[in-house]
Figure (spheres, rainbow, N blue to C red):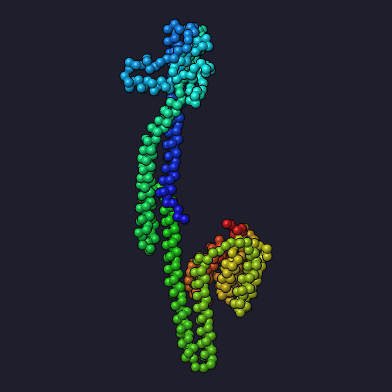
Length: 460
């Protein structure tokens, strides 16, 4: 399923929040207006009751129990223009009154109930008459035993409320349309810088790994493009290393292959049995050296991408296995080989790659240790679990110990044949396994000590 674009996600999120905020404000405004209108209408009811009392008092009807009369509004407004009559009658339908003297109904409006409906409670009350809701205000004058009731049909208030909502809907829809259009345009303008930056990257050639200029990108995107620049730099270094590796590998393979060609020609020309035997032995040794170079090159290339899941591994067992697999050369050269240390030490590593790492270092030690020499492997527990390999070979000068980890580097004047890949492979495996590797002088001062410090615990 395709994910929504950043532009669309931003628009949906901000539009939702904007619409919600606008509608919330609109609801608050309408509720406030409704409250104000309700209070205004209630105040009008109180004013109408007081006006009734003033008119009754001035007309001298206070305290008189006359017979019930119904006010004929139509006759009172007969002389007004027809348009004004319609407005007054429409308003009068929503309003009514009743006047009580000594608990007797003496006057009421045409739309007010008869005395069959008793007086309402003093103050404000809501009643239903003939299925119509009314808001009633009742005012009592105890001195003259008068009760004035003024009432308003709540249908009018509800109609006004609907008119307010409908009246606000049009401007609200127009406002939301303008806001959403402005929002979409703002997001589009805001993302234009990112789009231009992406287009610039897309137009690059596959060989252009130069850093991206982040001075023109928005501040929020600087971390993204800075990380991308870091990735480009790593990729540039990796490609450069791979190119150097291919060039160096071609150079290193050219020599043993040329030697093999010459040795095969000499073997073909050899006349006597002894001469043929010597030529074949030289050819076999040349093939072995070429095979070693090819195997090391393949190993070096493979470890660049190989996964290395970490696990808890017994270092003594790993060292013991590596010695058993790689001890052929030591036996042929009569090298004294020893394994010492704690058999219970556990470290975080990969058993397969760890065994290959120790095997590469042992092979290097056996190769440079003279016949009758010694190689000692120690498994120790210090600040971190460690494996230490000491040999009695010629050693490596202190100022060259970092250089020997580079691919194809060989010490000047080295007599022992080699490709200069052994320690480079060891360094690469150690880095993948988070193992710290260092070259030191052994305690007796002769030969070389290789130290491997392993992580103590598996980290996820």
